[in-house]
Length: 320
Image (cartoon, rainbow, N blue to C red; front, side, top):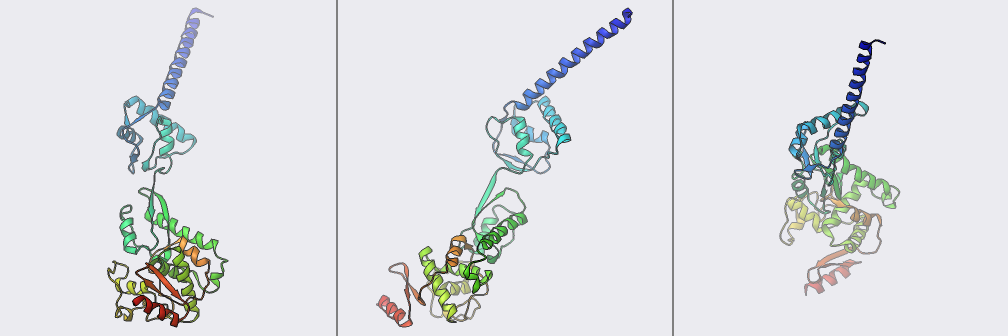
């Protein structure tokens, strides 16, 4: 082996060792950068649609360098060769002492920060529309019969139609659990939702709902008019405002399809949103012999009777 060849091998060895140590140094440096704790400017952080990783780091992380950005970007590109990770937009809660690796793992998934809407049983469509307008720009009214009043969680900036599908599935799942209930021998799902809405607007509490529900069952069975005041109020207001006064005798004579003092049977559709607890009460199929009731303002409760004569006697006694 001549001197020239020995020299060449020597330089190749030196170059190889040098390259190895340079790559080792870069690997260790990149590892430290990716795993060091980042300092967020604000938390939760918000990622807009179409934002790049570089823009996200500049906007949300303190004390970053151009080298940091390039290392993180390179890691994401290399990682995407193995598994496809793309950045989602939305709001994210990033735990304290998180690293760049933690950040990439978090923002490569749907938003982990959920917003909630609580739909109150007995709410009008107007009230729900007001609540929906706080979270969705493209919202549209939801019919009373389509959903059950409940608390629903969703990602901020999520699609409104996906939200609607979610809450409709909740109703489907609920009724599926009760598909073998005896109540379905006499009523369908739509009628149960209507009865539920009557209880929400007419009754005071769960105990009162049990009694009023039995009156509804008994009157429907006897083909009697339901004569529920809440349907008269709905006939006047259409659920758009509070009546703000007691009903007059003339109100009971309003010719409106929802007025159960005029028309027999259930109203054409629900008059409010219905909660699960109220539907549970209906599925209990409470039974008693009550056919009449009135509201006693002195006692702040409904007074129930089995016969018309008993009802009139109690009503006269109350009026005195």
